[in-house]
Length: 372
Ligand SMILES: CC(=O)SCCNC(=O)CCNC(=O)[C@H](O)C(C)(C)COP(=O)(O)OP(=O)(O)OC[C@H]1O[C@@H](n2cnc3c(N)ncnc32)[C@H](O)[C@@H]1OP(=O)(O)O
Image (cartoon, rainbow, N blue to C red; front, top):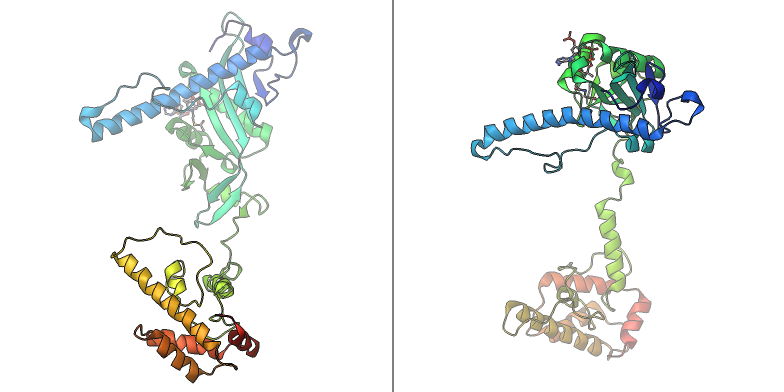
């Protein structure tokens, strides 16, 4: 790839390592690095590399379209129109990340001004990977993120020169690295030059080879902590108990009881109507639902609830006539009187009696003294 400026002046070395400073090392002729030109080189290489990806993407897409919808093959005119990915490599992205970009030039070409042959971009990434046994590991390997050699110069050994340089520079072995969506050419390259062929299946786009997990120390591979053990998670039963406690606190007197024993069966706890079945006074909150039309099933239900509530208020009022805590027989009697003809189901009656029996003495006194 040639440029309208002197590549040799810009990049004195055969292979230049660029980082987020976009500095090419030695400054040519005492001048500051021509950032704009370096940015142009990176951007153009990034675009060229992404074209390869886009071509693969489009050919895959076309073949899928042809297979499944013979009549609906869409011709893609521009990457933007197809919402294809932006170049993986650009000057701006390099500046924004802690990656390293290796640039290979051929200084002899282009009338001695040199051409850019290709580039390789690497960087560390936090990855969750599966080992051969399927265990999740948190890793942060050096990853190959982008790799490109100009079309006309491929299969001339330039890729190998770049890759070998990077391995020495980073002091890393090929099997210790992860590869971000490697193309078939790149996979073939890795197999040919580094004998990397058996990859360990992953659920993300990264490819690692079998040596990856053996060659890493325990420090580099951190097992992803297992899901919280059951004991640490607040069990549902406890949460429910907490809810019950809150409900008990919220239950209007006298049907609350302080601890332990069974109490009124919970009937649709979220429904104000079901709540009012077991209360002795009107709900303090405004109704959550609009009033139902008369004659509808829900209006019948609320009528029945209202009647029951009135009945309970009556029960409270009558119990206040006693000058001592009433016993269960008396309560039963009161209930029978108050509920008639609205007979409470046995289990509710039983629960109420039970609830009453467990009222502490002071509550019973309050019960007695409570105004109607
Ligand atoms: C994580 C990523 O970056 S994935 C994207 C990788 N990049 C690409 O696919 C872009 C297009 N391809 C290229 O730019 C280059 O082919 C690279 C970077 C993959 C390899 O660079 P090269 O200079 O071609 O590699 P080099 O000459 O050192 O090695 C040649 C070997 O690479 C593989 N290879 C290179 N080109 C091809 C090709 N067209 N078809 C199949 N295999 C190929 C082969 O194994 C080849 O050996 P062979 O010729 O004996 O079959």
